Length: 250
Image (cartoon, rainbow, N blue to C red):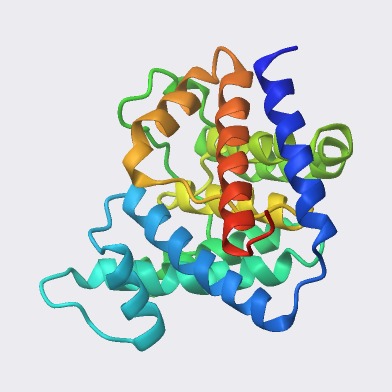
């Protein structure tokens, strides 16, 4: 049995326990949503260089307090990502996600900090620093067509793949198009979590402490896709353990 098969087997066993303890009451759902909104907003922004700590992110989002000595952009990114998370959470009531939904996620993340760029595909070619595979990113003139093809393939991939494999595939496929001038990583992680939540799995928090492993798995996936799928499966397994611990299910 492959490493991925073993991971998916453990994930399915955990998911059975989680599903047996549903439905949750409204207070539990709200508490979980707030917990993940802060954790994912902090971690996703920190992966991109945001300097707010997790507790500072919580204060900015929940209390609207400015943190002394921290850049305005860091505050705007926290507020924007929290708005985008709320929108993604609502979207996760259904399996489908549209091209318009993806553009709105980006727009919510980056208005007003990115102005007219928010929610619009890039019109220039981009380079991912440190990557050896920039030639495989979509050319700017191909982005609209590549995004239409990606969204058009979602249902077939979702029906064919295990939910965790589907989530990893969606994240990686989006990153390979890199449709926006900035914020592709943040949107990719929100899409990853939409794919998971909409199929009943807990959302994943990718810690900035392990940024190197995350980036390395993405880079290695150019030659072996399963590397990134296994990485995401490990994150889902950890997310399930945290979920089970938080709700005291075991």
